[in-house]
Image (tube, rainbow, N blue to C red; front, top):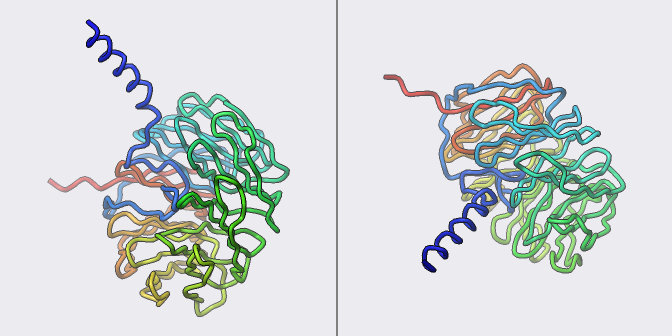
Amino acid sequence: MLRNRTRLALLVVLALLVPLLVRSEDWPMWRGNPEQTGWRQVELAPPLKQIWRVKLGDSIEAAAVIVKDTVYVPCLDEHLYALSLSDGVARWKYAAKSPIKAPPAWHDGIVYIGDMQGTLHALDGATGKAVWTFKTEAEIIAGASFWKNRVIVGSYDEHLYCLDAKTGKEIWKLKTEGPVNATAAIAEGHAILGGCDSRLHVVDLATGKELRSLDLGGQVGGSPAIVGNVLFVGNMDKTFLAVDWKRGQVLWQFEPERAFPFYASPAVRDDLVVVGCRDRAVYGLDARTGKLRWRTPTRGKVDSSPIIAGKYVYVGSADGNLYALELASGQRLWSAPLGAPITASPALADGRLVIGTQDGLLYCFGKQPESP
């Protein structure tokens, strides 16, 4: 009898925990993981088929996140939407009462989203009901990051905040010298980010103390991607950099032939870094040396941050196209005209790719069925 009760208790605990677990197939935060590398091992080979399309109330300028069968996507119509990944049917929407440009983030069953009035909202992922809110002094366009039971988020009020993830209580805040618009990457107990003060900040997550900072030569709009000791990030001047973040040392710099800024965040796999530029091109760079491997032009600026799915790259452009490129060569393999500029970045989970456009349409693509 005791053994049966113990087994029953274990099953109850597991039933409570399962909804809070992140699967390897999920895309629960900006760039897919805490290091913000923007890639998945699983391949999604083009051509893709449109599975569904949903019209929201205004422009979609931030990436969605995907957990299990739910897509969470923000919109400038002041709402965060939860939709079914399977068919796009709405599950709930939450009124933030301010436009949303920040990407959402999911952690332990809670969705975190910042708005243009500077409020960070924590919502029940299943129902969309508010758990708590935290007010900063300026807009939030950065996504939330997580460490242990803490949520990390930057604000245009020139602070990086660390809050208790369950209650929203402030644990510490760090003053920077400019608005924080990039999502912090998390690595080895550190938050690492850039911002409008043109500096890279390395912050101890336990104490909130800045351990080192480095001049990046220009304001930073995109978020860093981290592989081991090396961080990859572009600036709003014309330079893309690799930095040893532990030593605070620039390893290499790359500049396109035409001096245009990098607003997109990079994706990294193995020895290749992929990033979009406002010179209307996507670049593949050698991660060890910064040497140009390939350059693929589009007909519009590329603020959409690329993702890597196995041997393929997916990225949007202001020319209104979603592109699929070969990772090794940059060769354009497929494109889908979506009819409006694309600022948002793709999200990938369970063989489905989700991306929004500036005319308020959210698209879901999947693999084409094989011919009989």
